[in-house]
Image (tube, rainbow, N blue to C red):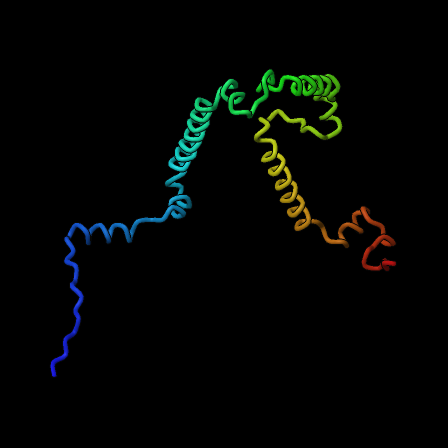
Length: 171
């Protein structure tokens, strides 16, 4: 009895296909490119392109939007009703003008510690504060590591013997 085996035909690959497969296997992934700072400019350009595409899409939608006459004909807008709601914008404008007239001055906000008093650019103020905090922490750690011994402080008269924390009991 003869058995027949089904053999699958093997695909013959060209040297170009093999070379391309080797190249693609060694290609870095997008996260590697981000981590090695190779692609930030490409990412920035990609983000810029996405923004322009959104602007183009919005521009296209605005160009294709129906006219007020078409909206009236289709029953979406009533006759004599303005598509722009000027009535609702007037109170908003008045409220904003009133707000700006009564808002505190910049110096008052600085005095109340709401606004930072800095000559740095607004985008850098947070980094400036972070740096100041790190410098203070480093200075404190350095001073704590290099502070004099308690006996030296008592001998110099900075601390009295009755103020010695080793002998004072906490309540």
